[in-house]
Structures are given as C-alpha cells and as structure tokens.
Image (tube, rainbow, N blue to C red; front, side, top):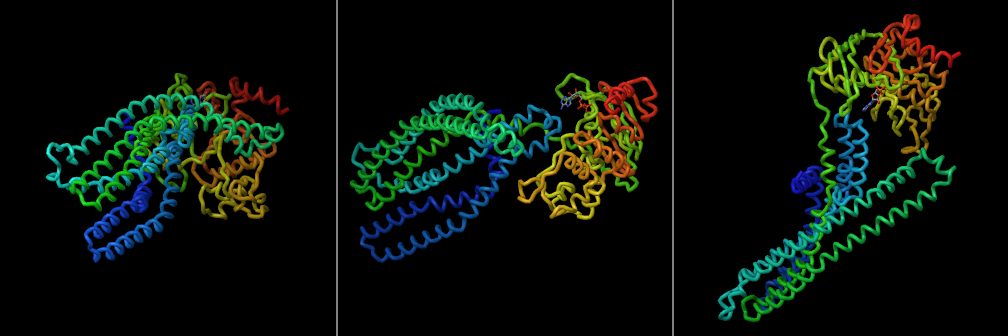
Length: 608
Ligand code: ADP
C-alpha cells in the first residue's frame, strides 16, 4: 500500500471510531486555545478607541470581551469531563480493534501461529510504536493547539491586506503585503522541504532504532506477561525469580527510554534551523509592521493584534511541523497493521435457515471428503465417506495426529473441506446460515477456555442466566451439590480476577464446567474432544456412566484416545493417518484384526 493511502486510511479509521471524541476535542481545543487571540482582538479595539479618543466604545468592548471569555470558559468546563470520558472509550475501542478482528477473520487464519504472533506484535505496537493508530491520535492531539493558533494567526494577520499602499514611498513596491507574505510562504515551504528530506533520513534512523528495540520490547512485554500471570507465581517464588525479573524489566525500560529520548533529541536538533529561520522571519515582520505604522499605512492599534498573532503563530509552527514530521517519518508498522486487519473475514456463505426441530432430527452425511490445512501440502483427511444417524453416540478414536479433531472442525464448519461434501438433512452444509449452523453443536474442545466471571455466567455464557437451568446442568455433570455448597452458589466467581471471594477449582472440575457449558446450550449435537484428559480415573468413570444421561437423545461425538471410553458408545470410528479404517461396535472391533484391536491391546496392558 502507498504510504499516503495508509495514512488516509488511518485517519479515516480514527475519525470513524472516535467521531464523538474528535468533535468534542475540537470544540474543547477551540474554546481553550482561542482565548489569547480574542484578548488580542479586543485589546486592539480598546487601544484603537483610546487613540481616537472614542471613550464611549470602551465599556461595551469590555463587556463583550468578558462575555465571550465567560462563554468560552463555560464551554471548557462543560466539555472537559465529556472529552475525558469519550477519550477513554475511544482508546478502549481502538485497542480492541485487532482482537476483534481475530474473532471475525477466517478461522484458519485465527488458528495459525504466525497470525497469532502477528497479533501479539500489533498489540505491542499499539502501545509502543510511533506509527500505531493510538500514536497518530497522540500526534493529532499535540498538533491541535498549534493548528488553532495558526488559524487564528492567519485571521488576525488579515488586516495587513488592507494597508494603504498609496502611502508607500516611490520604488518601495516590494513592501506590498502580498509580496512580503508570498516571500515568507516561499521561505516556509523551503524550510519544510528541507525538514522533510532530513526527517526521511531520521525516519530511516528511527526504523533502525525500532528494529533494535524490537527484541528488547518483545522481552519486556513477555516478562510483563509472566509477572502478571498468577499461574507463574509458584515458580517465581520457589526459584526466587521475582527480583531478577523486575531488575531485568528496569534495565530493558531504561535502555528503551534512553534510545527513544536520544531519538527525540535528534528530532529536536533537526528543528533548530527551522526554528531559527522562523525567529528571523518574526523579527523582520515586526520591523515591517513598525514601518507600515510609521508611514501611516496601518493604524497604530493594529500593532498589538498583528505582532501578537505573529509571535503566537511562529511559536506554534515548529511544533506542528515537528509532529507532522514525526507522523510521516514513521516506519512501516501501519502497513503491517492493515495487512493484519485485511485478512479475509469468515465468509458469510450460506443463507439457508436451519429448520428448528423439536425431535432433533438432524442427520449428517460426509461424502468423499478430503482436507489439507491452508498453506500445507499434507492431506490430513483422505476421502472420507460416512453417515451419522440421529441420536447415536459415536466414539472417534485413533492415534495422535490421525485427524480426529480436524474431522470435527470440518463437521462444525470451522473449515471447509478441500474436496467432497458434508450434508445436513440432505442439503450441503455450506448452504446453511453459518451462525445457525454453529448453533447445532455444543462442543467441548481440548483447549476450552473458562473466564474469571461467575460459575453461572461461565456455564450459560450470558451475563444474566436461568439459575434453575444452570444448577440442573451442573447436576448432570456432578457439580450441582458442590456449587450449592459454595457461599455464593452459582454466583461464585471463578478465580480472583474480579472478585476477592472467587474460588479456584481443580482441573477435573474445570473440565466438568466446560462440559456443563456445552450442555446448557442444549444443541442437538454434542461433541466432546478428549473431555476426560484431565480427569482422574474415578471421575472419568463417573462421566462415562452418566454419558447417556448427559446427552440423552442428542447425537454425540466423543473423541478420546483412551479406548475404554468408546465402550460406552453405539459405534466407534477408527481414524488412522487421516482415514477412517474401521467402524463398528466395541465388541465387533475387538473381535476383528485391525487398528482398533492393536490400539486396544496396547492400552489394555495399562488397565490390568
Ligand atoms: P488428532 O485430533 O487425531 O490428534 P488433528 O486433527 O489435531 O489430530 O491433526 C491432524 C494433523 O493435522 C496433524 O498432522 C496435525 O499436525 C495437523 N494440523 C492440526 N491442526 C493444524 C493446523 N491448524 N494447521 C496445520 N496443520 C494442522
């Protein structure tokens, strides 16, 4: 992407997300930074009245001035808290953008470790880079007072155009304000151009500097993560790592701070010629205004307005230019941000509504389905053709890496088959509305995620929930009485992130909670992917015993590498290197030669 296009997009994104904030901030800046200029205007008017001996005008001028002052101050007082509030809201939304994108992008991107690494880098850049959206926002904020001053300066300098040029002595045509202002504009343009070219060099330096800081930054945030992560607390204490970590972090941040402040000094040093040039221009302009007044081409009183406007403008200019420079000399991290934000979203293919059936009669048929992960040559699933009957319990077994989880990802439409089809009730699954299709499944993945909210909220995945239903679901997984005995029952918090009285539960209980969550959803199809991995043998047995009761008349898929669990299912599908090599009941399969018996015998020795 062209740099200019990237900037345009960044600005339009900022204004889209922070529209209210920017409008309020603009009004606030206008009210705040206009004050001195209003003062100059009225002072000029008052001095003008004094020089003309027109005393009657003075009281009304003073009243007007005080009136405007009061209004501006009232506006500031009213708007300040609004701006603070909108600012924090705006920043929160801004920082959440890449994480939100992670949830909408196509699942195969979200699952890729490179994309997740990129998200980490982008999130870090959001906080530390010169060219992230929050940093551009900072530049806009810092440029605003200067921009208001320059605008006012130009307005207040406008009387220069009304000088009486007939009073200029013979041969002094060049004293015409048009000529002088054009000359100044040319000087400003030249100095800005010089500035831009030297800032390009400095941009390169900044890029090199940031590359140097990348590793140190990454380490800083990584260590920060460890320090913040409660789970690492045990090791940190036992191995006495805390002090060392804090020392490291201090060293990293000193190092980063030093390099950045050196860079900032370099920027300031680059501004010296421009600032010097502006100073010289200011003195020349004072002299010019003085001469105009002396020859009578301008009223004396205007000296105040013109010279104050000029000095304010000239002191604001270098600042605006400097922030502008820092903005455009920023390295290419915005490109990286937008490459991430432009990753394709989950395609909204399919619009067919899923029929609501009380009898749960949803059947699935897979035909000649093959699959490779995007960007990989390995065929993970090979030519699978199977039918699944409503209400049956299927065990999916096979060695690690044989394709069991991938099969579930395809069945639930997290991925599309590379070849072949999946049909639901005889219609291609991809014709259904994706959200409605997702609702057909209650899934517990191996890497399920519970959050630091209340147990009821974890089970229902809603802020407000049906208490009876939560407790009866917890009963099903054998946690009902445990939760009833907690002081706050289903309102008890998981972990202490948000609530001091929060509890921590065992790995097995967590897994049961995750199962309860999928049951609460009450979807027609239940999928449990290695649900018992963290459970002790007794709890595992309890869940199997209860399995029929848990899933009732739902269709269920039960992935496990512990074959003892498959005995509880109606049918077993045996995966081997991406193929389904056997299908049948436990009894049928142990009685025949094949993969299942091989796996069963291998595991049976552990159970004896
Ligand atoms: P199982 O569930 O039987 O252990 P998986 O379905 O998880 O097996 O994995 C099957 C194969 O696909 C493995 O070779 C694994 O490395 C590969 N695989 C799994 N997930 C991804 C992914 N997101 N990208 C690329 N390859 C993957």
